Every structure is written in structure tokens, then in C-alpha cells.
Length: 148
Image (cartoon, rainbow, N blue to C red; front, side, top):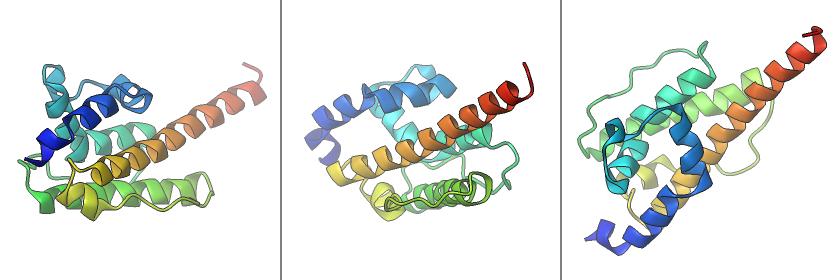
């Protein structure tokens, strides 16, 4: 079974600084799941879309499927929305161009437990982190410039 082959990889990924950071936005898998449950909560796209909404509350709301139930097409749909939101945020709000290749939602959707799927999730989290860091920097610079 695919997820058994990459369990050590998933275990290592779930203890990485990127995952630790994203967990600061709230618990994965209702806070009581295994690392596998938490990973599934990451790759279904619901939680990460909520994170993006916290980073950019002004974003256009698009319908995210809350009940993915391991359906690859629903996962791909949710992740596609997220990648679009991230890309728009970089271009419109930050006025920056993403120079790395965007995460492949088909790989994450169809093969989330593969090594390549995990690498794509890592790219997605890096882009989210970039959004969050730059929001914090803009807020800090605003307060710095306004005399606070």
C-alpha cells in the first residue's frame, strides 16, 4: 500500500518546521488525529484554504468542498482554488512574480502519499509561508512608518 511505503517520509514531513508553522493556524484533524490523519487534512485542501483566508481575508471566496472523503477530484478542486488564491495574492497584493514552479495539484490530488506528492505539498506550504511572512512584514512596516 502506497501510504505504508512512505510512512517514514510522511512522519519526517509531519515533524518538519513547515508543518509545525502551519499548525499555528489551528489544529489539523480536529487536534486528535495521527500524523496520517493530519497529513490527509493538509492535502484535502480545506484547512490550507482556511489558512489562506486568514492571511488574506479580502480574497474572493470560492466554494471549497468540506467533505473530501479521499476523493481525488474533490482534493484537486480544493487545491486548485488554493493555488489560484496564492498566485493572485502574490501578483495583486504583493505585486511579485512567483519564480518557482507552482505546486502540481494533480500529483497532490491523485498521489498525495507518494514522495513526489509530499514534495508538492512542501512547495505549497512554502508559498503559503511566503504570503504570511510578507503580510507580517507589510503590517510591521506600516506600524513603523506611522509612529507606533
